[in-house]
Image (cartoon, rainbow, N blue to C red; front, side, top):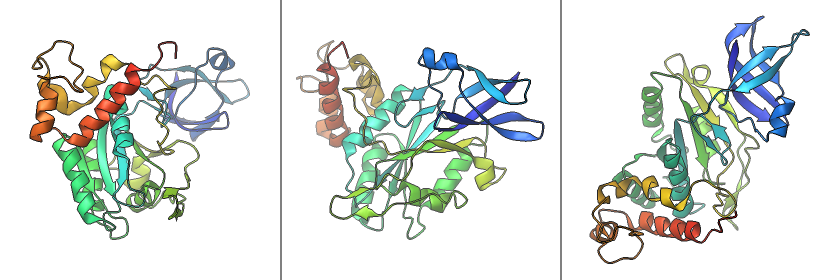
Length: 310
């Protein structure tokens, strides 16, 4: 049995890193089986696959091993951690988009890590963002690529979480958030292309064209395990078009709501406006961040009004 991990998907070709070298090769390029297309199965970066070798010496994908999880945007499988990059300024972040990504990650049992970039542009707002997400129960880091601040702490965190196992870690951020610049500082061997931010529209050119995994030990040294993913921006998390999860799953994707379970006045409380809602009580008291509850309410409305036939 020949096993490997898909590390790159581009134009119908897939680069697979083999678990063990074959004929001196550690990496091979394969196509998916024709049956995959008929069955509408799409290979994703992060997929564990079983390959077969032809008589001519080439390889093809025989099957995809069961996935732990998968995402539509960014298109990745078997993620363990997702580092959500938020800029403190230029562009001003949409916390709703950030919270939407966090909810999708939580639903898929992927641990979100919040990375605040460009702190040199607005340190006060960076601190405010840090407080929002730290109090909501997340690991949070404040960084400045220009001043090289927070980089050492982030690398140490990455080393700790990759000590055992072979985790897949993804970096994702809205266009212009400074994700590629940050990753170039963290991982100089990547040399990722970066775009220039338009001051007029405050949006960056999305320079990442495909999803690719990089071997952490090759980037940082043997004390690191697993993979690092660079991904396209996640500005199009459209609940109207895609089935990330259902309305009844939403509450569990906000971890700070957990202690309110069973404490609301009404059994079928939506936690959006009802009298006697424990979540709303905690929002008013400052125990739950107002912006987080606002994101919950907006997601609730979208999912509630989504036609079932979609």
